[in-house]
Image (cartoon, rainbow, N blue to C red; front, side, top):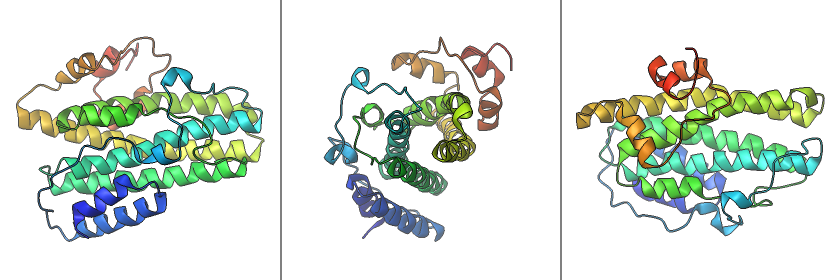
Length: 268
């Protein structure tokens, strides 16, 4: 199969192992430093998880509380696993869709996809230990919709997915860990905390990659990086009422202090 055929197969498949195999084959292809040929990318009508997940509006999602019960904890793990699964397809889609980007761009997002597959499998293991599987709880398709809405612009994709949503994860992740802390005597909670700590560390690198390519695309287009906030406004992505800004993680990922303060942090 060709490079883009492999990516399309991975994106359409609801089998994570097949996604992993296809991703590794694409990584191997890119290590040969051959720039893949141009691609006529499809716009997909439904996410790959639609075959086994019940998709509902975000306000119909189950509440993530009662973490002292197996079902309550499973609801939380399932929600995070859904984010990681969605992130697999988002990373693969960036490689598949933005074929004119440099080889390094493709290498970066294939590495991100491989990380997200590993994150998903770590969470899936905990979910199974709790007596559940991915697809047992309703999910939203917000990330899939954003991917469609940014399918024509790598600049917008880099601004919104890694630099907004994944960066927001850097803020939320430590708060979840904090919430779980007094339950860490439970072996599965302890494993979840350890998994979240791995995800947090590696997501900094993912956001950093997004920051790098966002800045590259700003330079290519001759626009100032302040366009970031204009893009957020255009997509009605608010900045206010953030309870916690992970200043250190965001700085490591490439955000300036000016941006971090504009996002709501008092100090930087």
